[in-house]
Amino acid sequence: MVLKMKLQNTKSTEYRDWVIELKSRIQSSQLKAAISVNKELLSLYWEIGKSISSKISKANWGTSIVEQLSVDLKNEFPNQKGFSRSNLFSMKQWFEFYSTSNLEISKIQQLVGQIPWGHNLAIVTKSNSIEEAVFYCQKTVENNWSRAILMNQISTDLYNRTGKAITNFSHTLENPISEFAGKMNLYLSAVDDTMKTDSDNPTIGLLLCQSKSEVVAEYALRGMTQPIGIAEYELSKAVPKDLKSNLPTIEKIEEELANSLTKNS
Image (cartoon, rainbow, N blue to C red; front, side):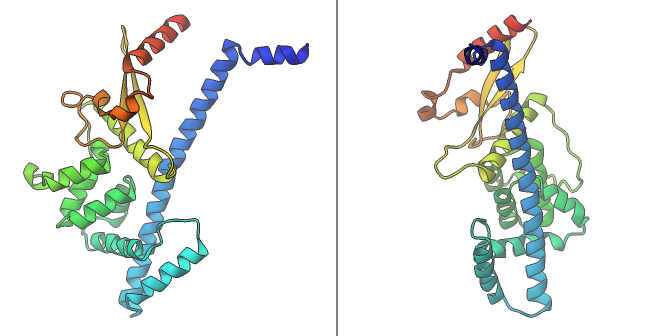
């Protein structure tokens, strides 16, 4: 009888709500961990790049030492990616690019630490000056661009088109909804870069917004190909056709959320 009561309790509304709450906390913790991992990884890459640059220039070891370093690091840390010869040289290039700046290095580290490694590589390899690189770093942070959007903005020469070389470290966001959409996109990139396996599909996010009279839901995907903006881009259109059949419709989500809010009010 006691066992039967316990099983019945697991089907109660109170139990389901409790599980949902715990799942939400776990997912939030995983997201924070992914973002934290990205910052720590970039801090490590910066120090490795700095050390390689110093050894080659001051110790006269030559660039061939990087290939040996790659072998040794991969043998020592077989389960950790990022220690290929080319990536080690990229760390060196990344550090050296910014080390000649008149800007405070600690502020540059703080700025570049807010965006994924792939974004950083795209910026330093495509920018012709530190001012241009800082511009794209800041724009990425401000608008939370995916790598695809960043590459598109660089290829269309946004820096020279706008005529603005932003060299301070302050930024504002004009649209709060756009801000949340952008942050979601950046978080998806961080999760995919640090948690997604080869067998997983790209992570999909869901944005929820409640007004006084309705609930609005939109899908957000990491692979967007144009800037996020409520007036010029509808997130729901970013859902690939091959995924739509496996996802609940926006209308269904909004209906379920509205019903849930009504019951709890």
